[in-house]
Image (cartoon, rainbow, N blue to C red):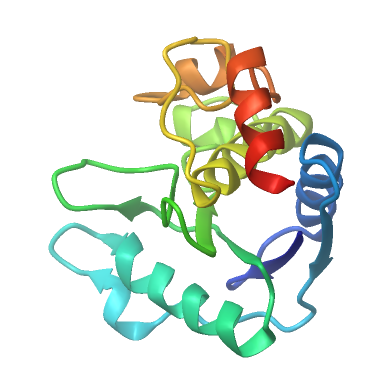
Amino acid sequence: MRVSIIPFGRVEASILVSIGESLSSVFPRMSYNILEERIPIPEGAYNPSRRQYHSGVILMKILEAARAMKVDRALGVLDVDLYAPNMNFIFGEAQCPGSAALISLYRLRPEFYGLPPDVRLLEERAVKEAIHEVGHTLGLGHCRNSRCVMAFSLHIGMTDRKYPRFCEVCRSEVERRIR
């Protein structure tokens, strides 16, 4: 399975590399590439009344890119505040199952919560969210094990509590689906 990591706007290269290396170590037989070109966020994604970006509009752009590049999966990485219908905010979204996923670094940054910048913590959170969303593209749902990377995160504390890997049940399911 091949995943293309697509940066939208300004995203630190070191974070993109950490995401790619973590994906290839967690998912069996997965390779990745990082698109060198920075893709602009679609204009129609911004909702001025919410001051946030609608993830569904961006997800469709990622799906188009995945089809054009002929890759199994495409993961968009952004640094803007995202929302989905009926949600105040989201850390990421994916087709479940499908070939497109995205994560945003915006609310993963410690400084969003009034803390000093911490690149290591940001990378750790980004890796967890990337694994989670790529897991959804394989058809995995949310896991009831709060330590599993597939557990739903209502807030950043739940993301921090998770491990950057699958529980045994989800791991078996991933292996079955990737064969």
